Structure formats: structure tokens, C-alpha cells
Length: 209
Ligand code: GAR
Image (cartoon, rainbow, N blue to C red):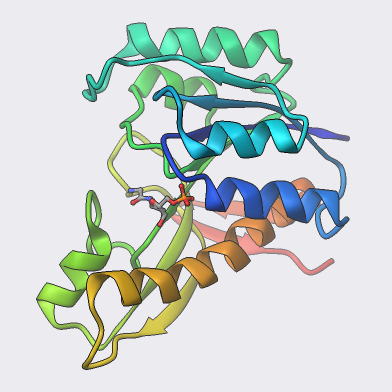
């Protein structure tokens, strides 16, 4: 069965592009990108979505960021208008800087993924790369996880480690982590589409093909 994909963005959209490109080149099959939704107008991700011929929609939140089912209802309506439903869809948060309401999460249970630039459960929330650098860890990385009601707490699908170097700045560290993000996010989407993710409590077991 084909998975209907929505990608939610707030800015640059490089993870979104990695996913769309992986579909285009056939690394991911049986996934149809249906819509890209941004909570902010005029961001780069919207231009890239159009280059990939994916409808790019702005649902402006005016900078208001708290959990908000009224706002999320507008997202859900847009998803349904583009045929991304709880029974056929996947929603990828790709630098989407909002926390989802529990109503939205429960409606699309285990069908919403997020990428986060640390090895969760370390350094959840904002500025994960800065948090890692300031804490002094020697290894950090990135995580793709299913979204649950918490902030960056859902079952972990894939992680990659990245070494922290003595001469790293937030920018150099973020750049190396981002390269790994672009590998694991498309891979997680591929595994989902191939029905190879089995959730057992907090654990996500990857079935062999
Ligand atoms: C990525 O590094 C992503 O992991 C991070 O925002 C960046 C978005 O970049 N997400 C979070 O910090 C979520 N808490 P992109 O727009 O180029 O994909």
C-alpha cells in the first residue's frame, strides 16, 4: 500500500529535501509526497517543496508556539484535504518548531515522526547541539523517533552518533550532525513504508526485509 506523506516544516527544509530527493531517486518507494505545510511564511522549505512539485501550504501561527489543538485542527484539516489520513498517511516533522497537541498526536498515533539533533533522551528541546557542546559530552548525534505526547520523548526509530571535537563550535557540530540527519530520516521513512517497524512498548524493532 502506498503511504501518503506530509512534511511539516518551519525553515530551511534540508531534512525535507533529503526525504523528497530519496523518493525522487527511488531509494524510498511506495511513498507519495502529498503536501508540505509550514507554520511560517516565506521560508526556504516552501520554495524547495515547489521545486519538487509538492503543494506547499502556509498555516501561519503568527509566532505563537504553545500546544494548541485549535491550531493543530487546521493542520489536520489540511492533511485530510490532501488525503494524508491516519490509516494511509505519514507525517514527518522536519525542523517543525512547534509542540503538537495530544489530540493531534493521538489521532495520528505512530504515524508522526520527528528528527532531533541529539542522542535522545539527552538534550531534548531547543538548541540541542549547543546543549551538547556546553555540557561537554564527547559523543552526540541525531535521533528519528515517533512523536508521543511529550517533547522529544517518543519511541526511538534510528540514531547516529557524531563525535564532538575540541575545536567544534555550535555551527561546525550542527553541520556534521545534519549530514547524519540526512541519512537516517530518509531511511526511517523507507523502513516505515516497507512496514518494517514493529513497536513493542518503547522499543522499535526493525524487521529484516
Ligand atoms: C535540524 O537540525 C533538526 O534536527 C532540528 O532543526 C533542524 C532543521 O533543519 N530540529 C529540532 O531541533 C527539533 N527539536 P532543516 O529545516 O534544514 O531540516
